[in-house]
Image (cartoon, rainbow, N blue to C red):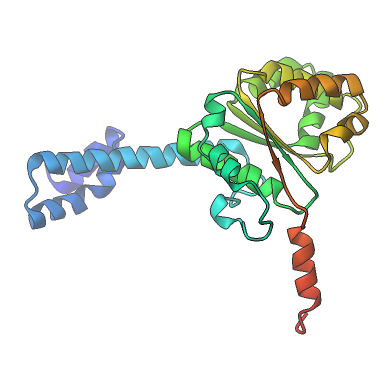
Length: 253
């Protein structure tokens, strides 16, 4: 069997990682006089790495992040120095998802809540391989309303309940359906102590009753969310405001 046939056979066996690297590994083995076991180990490692990379890419695509490039590496931590970085990086390990704990990110618009929420989602996928789903709050609650009308509420709830980490972003940024409080309560109740929910909001929790229009439902929701929640406060400075100020003082602007 020549090299072309070997690579074809590897591809047929779905060993694409080996197929891609086998020629390089053969040259390496000849140059460095690798032992047969070391050569075989290197090929297996190449295959495992390829499969892991593909798995992570699939998970990232399934998450449906609004901004796929929002990662911890891309965040300016010096902008708001009072942020609890220890808690943030603890969340990034994904262990809170293993423990079925929740998280609330609270603060004014433009302070990095959405960025960090998606970055945590990225980190959880890469660290633990968990499935993550990202939804903007108004779209999620509109989906509930549409699913109820269309008779698809049960399948939607099952999908949202099963995902290990659900990120609900920007609660309070847009007008919500009249049933928002009840829908959010049902979702939180189903996920409570079974999976993890991360919610970002520009409103303090004290305002959620007014925001959602149902004080009793909101109280029940927060009772469950805050029971095992990690609360991270953002601000007070807005990155977007800072950027606008810099542009306005730029003589070239």
